[in-house]
Length: 466
Image (cartoon, rainbow, N blue to C red; front, side):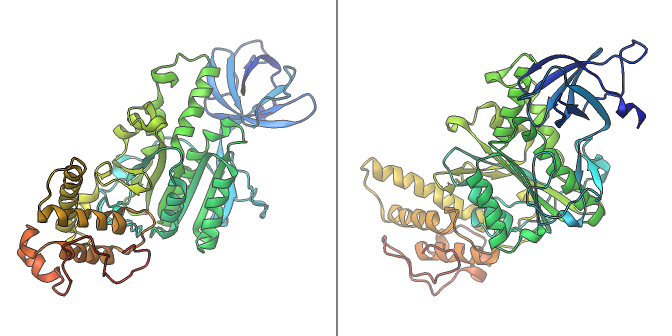
């Protein structure tokens, strides 16, 4: 492209990682090859080059965000527009590879410059190509598979707070999920967390089906904004062109939103709620809405982490996220809270592609656990407990240890059997208030009833805490 050879040198200002340059053609008229979202190359006086992206157009003034930062950048630098938006490498060769926020390999592997490139961003999927969610993604996490099933094409966050083991939990889901390809996008990760994900995928033997896009905390904050777009662009190509079932893992979307705020402040935008820009909802929705089950092809499912500063669910990031996504998993004190978690698409698969007793056992377990919480509150207030209350307390302890602990790993069918066994240890069949046909088929008659807080006698299973 001839226009990409034109260099512009009228730099107006450099603020943070933002550079503004006046674009005037050779005829003295404003207007050139620049387009919103396109790439540019900024060349410093010492010859050092850094990619940048057009993020603002105002008559003859173009605003760029410089990916490598502007430290040491002179106002005598030159800008050259490349005429195309940011691109990500897409081919079979990217599986098992690690890239930074602008798509450059981090792992020292073979060069991929000759591989196919796909543009990031762009419009979401045509609704005519979307299918109604109808297939389950198994994770072997009982609190997900049994109580809040993850469905293909779903977009759902894990709400948590700093200090919770959400990253190790997300890595385990990526390892255990029955997806064809896992695309990981890390934003603002400390090195320990980056190493956690990489070593976990490698040790589990799933690195060959994984692609990682990583922006570390020490990397330029501008690159943080590109990580979700990189991950989702590649995920879409795997789903559409190769009919793969793709799971996209993103952490942490609050870091992404904070990067948006930082860029907005540098661009003199008027902040809205708690300093975030007014388009926060749209920015989040542009990424989440790429989750899709493609007609005649594969699917893209998005599972993200959204940390809540101060455990405040009304914070702008989780608050806006809740309006976009189809539920949430609430990770609190090392367990998935059954009351705070919700999957709005689970009814599309429960009892349809899962076992016939799934719906009733899920509802019965939550009903008894709710009653157990009430009994626990009565006990804490020194009220006299009935014999049934005592059994509820035992059930509550078993439920917490066997299902809510995020370290428990069980296939769905084994988890459903353990649900029946847990109920049988604490309650008689007539106390379950379930369909008689299901009780007769699945209720284990050989289980010793628990009338006190005695230790579990259930046989050990993989990851089970008795």
